[in-house]
Amino acid sequence: MRNAGEDALFGSNQAEVGDMTGEAFAAALERFSQWVVAFRGRVGELPVMSRVAPGEVSAALPVAAPLRGEPVEAWIADLDRLIVPALTHWNHPGFMAYFGITGSGPGILGELVTAALNVNGMVWKTSPALTELEQVVMGWYARAMGLPTSWFGMITDTASTSTLVALAAARERAWPGARENGLAGAPELVLYCSQEAHSSVDKAAIVLGLGARNVRHILSDDEFRMRPDVLREAIVADLAAGRRPMAVVATVGTTSATAVDPVPEIAECCAEHLLWLHVDAAYAGSAAVAPEFRWALAGCERADSLVANPHKWLFTPIDCSALFLARPADLASVFSLVPEYLRTDTGAAVNLMDYSFQLGRRFRALKLWFVFRAFGTEGIAARIRAHVELARRFASWVDRHPGLERLAPRHFSTVCFRVRGVGDESEDELGARNERVLAAVNATGEVFLSHTKLKGRTCLRIAIGNLATDEVRVRQAFDLVVEHAQLQPVQPGT
Ligand code: PLP
Image (cartoon, rainbow, N blue to C red; front, side):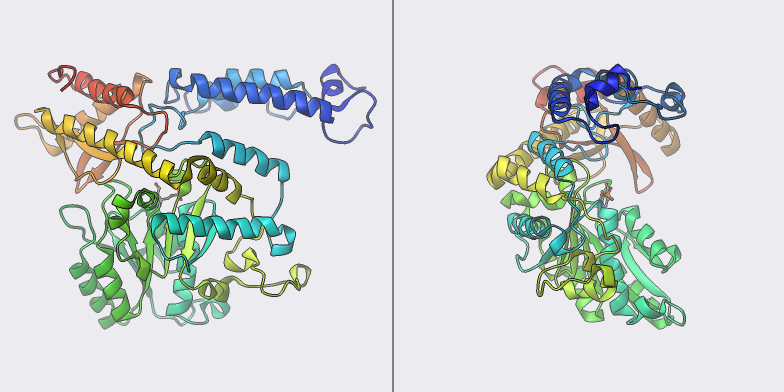
């Protein structure tokens, strides 16, 4: 026997199997769209960082799925009661930890349509528009950043995947036949990146069988940029020891300090030693949509591959990472493998499964397409600029306060700073004190900042990237740091 909830979803006259009726779906869509609109309206009033204890959410949920269907109102009630309070709200204007992001209106609408279409872009014919829109939107993105429009672009879930896929091609170039024969009998293949590079580089080395110890973390300079002289020395030393240098990963916008490695010199070094150059511009790549930040991508036109993440600073809901390749054939030589059931006769059409290890492919281009169409490249540039300006102001407040100091130059929308040491306070004591200040600031629920270490020194980080973040919120973050560090308050307007 059906219950009332099931009747509401599936209709009392329908057969026992099948999806929601059109009527029930329309009513639920209306209900959820109201929920989403209301949530977006009130998210700024919620505590930005979740306050639940580990295990609390799972303990509140039944151990097994319901035997019979439940009405939409029951799902919504639990969403409000159990899920929302246990979220750290990345779409909150006070979220300024890690890298601030935005699941923007157009991006959310894109996700909705993607789910409704539910297409899978394994090969061109399984959804021609998915493959072709992805290529077109990647072209738009490259053009908007001032990167070569001849590059091949493809969307993956994360920068970690993009880097892994690119480095698989680098491995094939360094040890031809690795795809067929594996690495048995190969010399040790070596990967170079700076001390400040993201851990996804190390993870790629683990997955590709290079071994984590074959990643050289090249010393960075006082501004956290890779030192090309030390890179050259490391390559020479590895060659002398019989190892085979494989690739260099340069970072444009490092995770902690948003430093920009000297890509032109690194590209020169890669050309001399025939090494693959992969650029990780996961965060800062999108800044180049504003022409005044194109300097950060200087030299990147010489890269073999580059990753930039629209889900970081291009207002696109997670997940959406863009991988660009100078020569797509490099990827196809590693990943193209066509079983009979996937053979097609569509001639020159691109089959995206040939360029990565994944077969199934979500229609992610749609949300990025909506973002470009809603904001336009000028609108995106204006928003990037506004975030950078907020960070510039925050940095100037830090610089003017005698109790605070900055630990890195500010290039984009991220500021690294800390409460200054007093008397004979040791580095460890100072680090612990800064961590206590951070915990107290985050416990207010008004803002969420994060921390990192730069050359062994603990620092606090503010990273602006949410479209709802304004100067009032950024000032609030500053005032909360001052208050919880028990520093002299600053007069408004200074
Ligand atoms: N590269 C850099 C420079 C990053 O800052 C990050 C994450 O913050 C990543 C890569 C990894 O990004 P994803 O979460 O998309 O794998």
